[in-house]
Length: 438
Image (cartoon, rainbow, N blue to C red; front, top):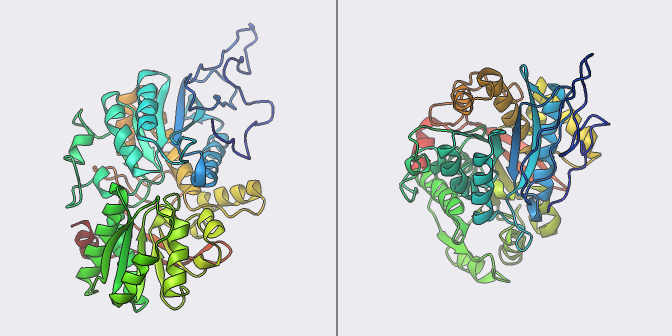
């Protein structure tokens, strides 16, 4: 159903797949059997590298197809590295792992029906102790209520939409409260939300001398709409004059008319909110054709563009564009985080480490720490996630707030060359974040 990861597909002879006996046994000849795992088409085989019978299962839920495949593959590898470092245990509780896919082949994008059916399978299977995911905020909005009813903890390495955790003027359908029908939060994330990202991008735009940004966002996508609104609110609070605020149709073949409009309106910079997978490379090419190279008219984008596939697909048109990502860049991490990045770099053999790979490792570490505290009791695991202080050890220290958000919100600005490289780290002021939230 989806491509396998390059590293840790088999952890020597110790990995146990579905239907095989787990390694080990005592002097009396007792035999431990492997955990069954989820029997659905969207999930790969169970993996386990420990010696004792696993007492539970953690799953990842990520888009493993399309333009996100490389990014998601690296996140899965990071999760398995953390499991291997901890001997496949959460304290004294042995845990197995299963990677699941929330995208579909026909589009390469996350799919609402798939997200819901995945979440229903996780909730119905008592083996599942927690979920690491999702990457796309829209998919999270489909899964959170289902997992909330089932008391399953969910920790995201990449969701940034404000409305998953906090009220905002851009929220729809009673979010965030409507996402938690049980009345208790079960969802947390290890990345700052889009209010931080919108504020940081607006601050960076002003630093770049942009006075009249033209904002484009993907049509019919609430996450992209929210990001664009967050940027606009923060930019206006800084005194910037929004030259235009328009959508692009991901199914269009050319976007020259939009950028001709930007030229007429006197735009001196462009901001994109959306995904590379939403025909983003063509948007970038059209921008370069009409407005010129990015060193002349700066191009800034939210994190949906901060992936190697943007550069690979857009080619020279992406050169010197900027993209923001929540949190610190992989190369800026220290201690356990730096060690994890070093291991990932060794596994990837020259392929740049994607921004969200260490964050997936961090989400795994937080979930394992919570299982250590809560055992196999789902409700106790959720309580332990929300009691997290200091984080999981891979990122700089933070706490999980009652909303489910991390207590700190650095934003990294990357610039495109042959890969995206970090150039700035911005921690926007609380007043600017509040303005961005609306």
